[in-house]
Amino acid sequence: MMFRRKQREVPELNTTSTADISFMLLVFFLVTSSMDADRGLSHRLPPPDEQQQEQKDINRSNVLQIRIDANDAVFCDDEPVSHQQLQQTVASFVASRQTDNHTIVVETDREATYNAYFEMQNDIMAAYHSIRETMARQKYGCALSQCTSTEREAIMRRYPLRVSESMTEGGSR
Figure 1 (cartoon, helix red, strand yellow):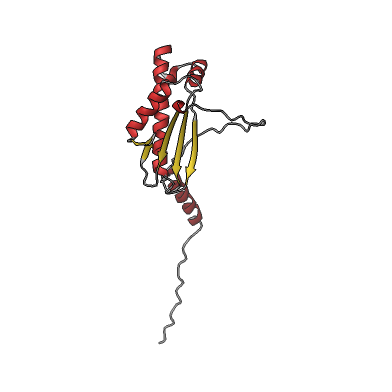
Figure 2: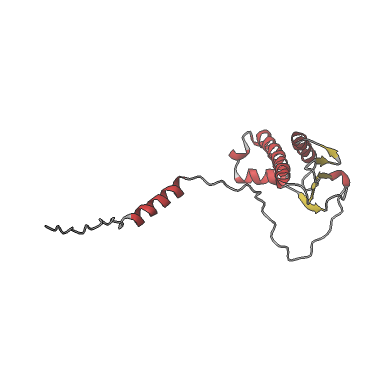
């Protein structure tokens, strides 16, 4: 007797929900993963001036010169300084000057790293923050963050951020 073999059917997979599961996994990983935020400097540029700007003669005693060389060494008035010394120097320089009567000149070598520039900018901003905080506590008896907007504006007018930046070619000094 001859037996006929039945042909077996291969069971198929039900793939109707595969796209839904893939989409949900994608959303899950996007929501739960952390993204590194870029570090950067937040500077507000002045509005474009319609009139021709006047050149001002600045007294050398009212200028603090900060320089970063190609090896990321920081110099303040041609003296090598650490980051803590730079912060203290900037704070004492700005605190000893009258309103709008000081300028910090920053020269950065093109070969210097962004990290060195970023740390130098942080030191300058920390110095300004410390002297503004000191003035707020002395004059208004509270922290700068707790001052009213008019009090903060008065402090900012007393200690304005006056920084001039330029880029130099490697080996210029």
